[in-house]
Image (tube, rainbow, N blue to C red; front, side):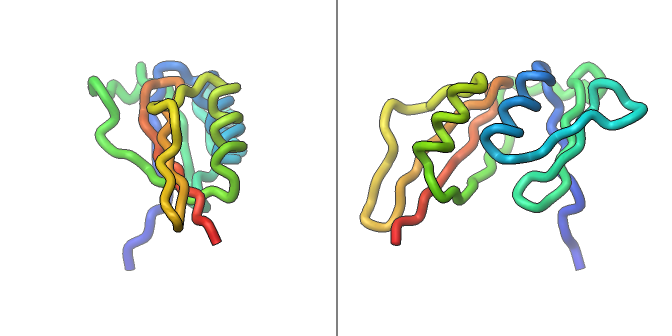
Amino acid sequence: MISIRSITLAATHVEEMVTFYNAVLEANLKEIEPMPGFYSGKLAGHGLIVCPNEVAEVVAEQNRQQFCFTVADIEKTFEAGKATGGKAMTPDFEKSDSEIRGWLIDPDGNTLEFVQVLS
């Protein structure tokens, strides 16, 4: 059986990314002792590590993956995201009869998709 144990984000703006992911995705990131600058938490039930890009040496002009999250309240999620250094990719949400969809850019420029399912 294959399962995801953890996801590592190599961050240029580590402190801003920790604040953003804790506020928007309830990641509960905490610094790993005795590894200053490394943070551990959870992302949608999976392990999440944020590490300084100086260590990871990732070279990318833009993120090469995009996560899509289901959220209970997309407007609340976007308020938290914008309050912690994120930016909306578009001025309005995409709406259909069954869902509301939007995209945020995190403090390092990665895009994240959010969907609120309507009942």
